[in-house]
Length: 253
Image (tube, rainbow, N blue to C red):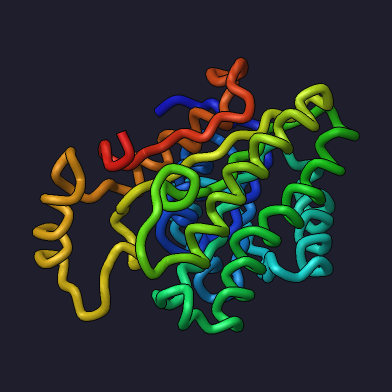
């Protein structure tokens, strides 16, 4: 295992499950001190336990990324606890219930935008304020192949929020590259997390459905998505700025 993030402090939001938990564990395995954040304390504490069991270093800070005070406290706590912030993976997100636009509940729409889009903005702002005053850093936002890259009927809130994240990433990258901050995004397709299942679907059902929908013929692993995240955050991607890296098995090719 390489050690690309030795002596780096890495913040991962939405770290209590799925891609976020896999990201937190992968950064720690490559030498980072990881701060796992999420809305459910028990879930991020479990992520920390898994990292420590693997011999890594981590701590948990609960936060709701849709709340400005929570995000400010989160980044402040990271810096106070660990002495800095070098890398951030803004991964927290929600899917929202599917519905046609004409029937979309306004509360669902608002919640999806609050978490998926405003949450990324708030995290970016706090992370950038610290990084530009302390020599720069790298930020990776989790977007989606649904949004800027493709659309799905019934997913207006999710698709709109993620399309906006892809655009926000590019604008933020241009705004702050001169501050020494590289900002990029990863856009996963169907990935082996709870969000990839339809209601009542089994793993076999999902596999059969995706075999025809994904050119590669299968669901992606969290490790495959996280490999892209870590590369974008590493010095190996030092010339990559404002990129939205799609990892979807060819769905949007």
